[in-house]
Length: 283
Image (cartoon, rainbow, N blue to C red; front, side, top):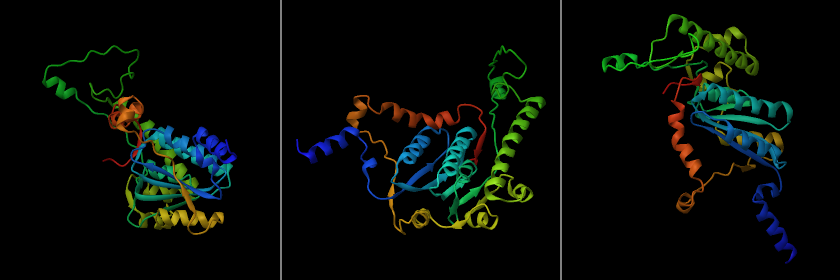
């Protein structure tokens, strides 16, 4: 085997040609849709963090928010990168980057938004469907055996008691204050100023700029160009994106990729499976 053939064989066997890229690049990571899970994004971020050819990061955000835990997890990991690494990170809000989507953007060095982007929505929501009235009309009763009074708090089979509401209200208020504290810290704004707009209201990108919630009006290309300038790669740097999984009909017939496809189908159902704290714009 020739030397060239040997090198090619090694690259193919490793299955990841990105690590052999020459020159600097900007990594473009997407935060899209409802934030219900953090695993895929965190894995992509860790992979690019290990890549020496990546000189900076752009977070392309198009999300109305989602579940509190995953939103905080994404924020935490991006914030950790910002603290431990000198590579710049810019968040670019597209059509929407509100509530949990905005929470994630707060971890970046700078936030870009379009003038008509939907952002803000600083707040927390927790929803509990109540079907007890409907069940009563059709003569269905639900028997519950529980270890303590509040073990079935939020059950769809009974009304929330005043004490239930007090407990849940305290929980929502605590998480809400966590959100406000992060905005105050990251945007360097007076707490009273943040509180005045942290009532769940949505804002346009231009309004957010006026309130100091974003740094600049611009799109994702502007964000990439800005990172290029900051890293010395120029106005039009090479961009690297996570590889998306693609499955053919043969893959599905053979069982390859079936789990991933089923997961995507089931995600909308899981998002409404039970009461969860959410940083989200109701939709």
